[in-house]
Length: 79
Length: 330
Image (cartoon, rainbow over all chains, first blue to last red; front, top):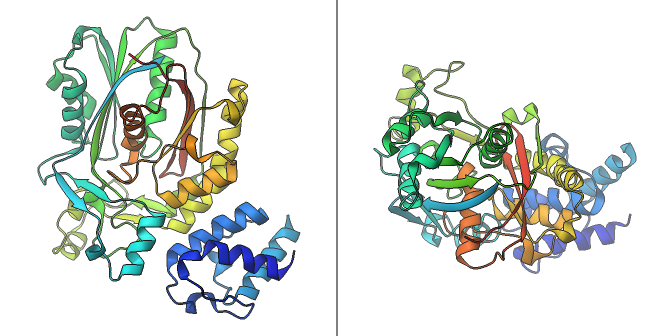
């Protein structure tokens, strides 16, 4: 699992946020136009592509794209 | 058992979901893409869920011999009284015969398939001519105007469905995950948390919340429950029939929101043309959503005689129930 692929998957999901370039250090909730709806989009995407269903509790610890990537990797290992 | 006829009724007061309903253009665009409602209907203050169901029944039963109806199931989260059952009152209003039995099913979003499952059990054990399912929901009465999670998602509606027995055996898939309690609920007004003066006074500006309590929804929690239970429930259901998804012609999920329907479609790899989504007009109408989508698909000539239609209701509980129906044109 590569962070670049992960970022590409995220960007695809967040098309409506426009041409905003995501990087590992992007703080999710600081993205222009970020809304609670985007959490649902990313939860559905991560379940579909990575077979990990994240709860609200899990996401509390996530600030950046890289945090999210690490969390998904960790949850994949726990499986 | 098969669906002989359906009718639905939307109350006369439309709420148009426009940009003016949102703080800015972007929030409106998000709502359009991921909730998907463009018009919702709101019952008048003096209309109950059973009034909406009654109006649908009057449309459905115009040319039906009422003496052929042997059982009435009423599904709603907002019944008219604690007692007697609302089905009993609808039975009286419609003038059904005394030997027609009645039952209320206060289930929520899985209410329609559960009503079908009850009807199927009755048909299988007794020699009945017809079963009438009535459904009515007034979720707008539990929506707090300042709660973005539930605003412009839910709409009020009534539905009537007439069922007849057939030799085709139906299977059902159902289940429950009580951890869903915290993700979707209306706590006030029941035995555990009665309406008290403090609650009633806190809603002075939103008096409609004092009728059935306030709806609280954690969208993330509900999506997680849906994605953990519903795909496997769909596969178990197909196993019971010995079908693959390829053999199914149409899929009607509970019309929760476009984001939920899309996530299930993607996870189950269902081609778009098989998905029935009529959220735009009417929105999430709780137990009415599946039969309304069925009726609209029929109106739009999407069903052919013999088509296999998989329906799966899920939501508050978290409870689910589904079946596969064969469409019969009448």
